[in-house]
Length: 250
Image 1 (cartoon, rainbow, N blue to C red):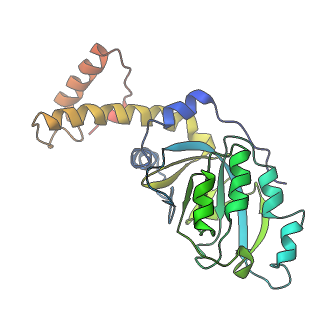
Image 2 (image 1 turned 30 degrees about the vertical axis):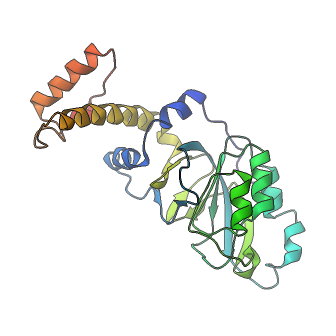
């Protein structure tokens, strides 16, 4: 149901894997987007790598007793059916309304996602069966854990449609980057422009960090004034690295 999943270009994924979510929020802010960090999306386990993927969306609404039942798990519209539609490499983004007392997925569902090659699970809700979920090896970003099943507080209604997750509007096939700071959304229509600007911003900030480590003061350096912008451009040219115009403007 919903939008057809799209693959993410490998070169784009590789470029974003080198860009922090902190940098992405700055780049998106410069493009006028402030509400892109999915609140409550914290890594469930320490040391997770930065992951990038197209959003495969799932949506829950408040529990209704005639719909949110254990029998619903066998319905054609269920989390089980949604998982079987997930393509390899996607990031499952689950809008769970920030509900903290009903686990959206447990170990068996996460194991199936891992077997299907899903890159990660990102949600503003919680999971259950913590030890089992961790044992599947599926990277998870969420608000923690709860023993009760999803139907205790939520009704699953569909996948690959627009959702709200952590207060952010997420559309199918938007791009999600998740790291130690949480998960950030890149609108699909802005992907190319954001990637180019973000890679350049990371390069610039790497140069600035080098200057700071050498004892340089911040004023006029971060952001760079005209003199330091010229120094950066010369360094980048000498290193054989391209630069963008926006990243070096104070």
